[in-house]
Length: 300
Image: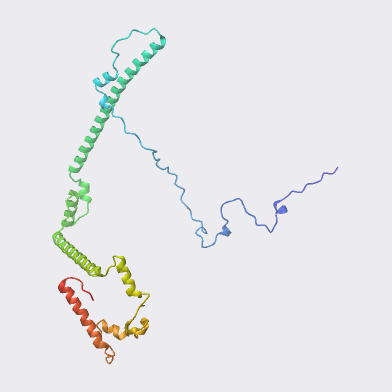
């Protein structure tokens, strides 16, 4: 029987040519990176840093117990004292074992206190000796003269700069000849500001006192203010000239009148605006002069 040859199935045989092929790689293809991308050109990068971080300690440690106060012979004897009435050797094996364990605990307690005290004293003496040695070495280095290598290789400085460096090394303060003058100017400015604040506060209090006459503090005053502003049901609000509306009292003031009221000259001298403006300006000046003389606010 002739053997039939099984054709090999390739990927192109069973994958649609119109479908887009996606590889399993996570790196982007070179054709998909635009020229504006910083990865368009291969630039060597440094290896990733693998230095381990310093591990953080969890929680807080308790305060160590002070064993030095229990290391005297009296304290050890009080903690490991024998019974007041000596007992005979127990015949029961269990009681004999417990007595042996009690004696062992007393021995371990006394020897442990002695060992801890000896270790603490040794550590204290070692730390004190190391501290004294470091202090002696530091004082010797500070008091040592300048070495020839430093003196011959040091830069040449101006005497004033050298004096300033010496002063800084000795820990002295920086000289300030204008300190008193600056302090006086600062105190003068502070006094002027405080005086201005006091005057502004007094002016505000006097203004509040002058305006307190028109404050509404009760229901009767509120009803009176409402009636004056809007009128009553029997008699509505009346404007000047007996007109029923504000627009019936005449035209609003012109720009020339407003400028003249502020102290400027009116362009239209024929309508009497100059005389009215001068009267308003004179009245305002008299009021301000009265405020300066009396030291308080006056009604406009």
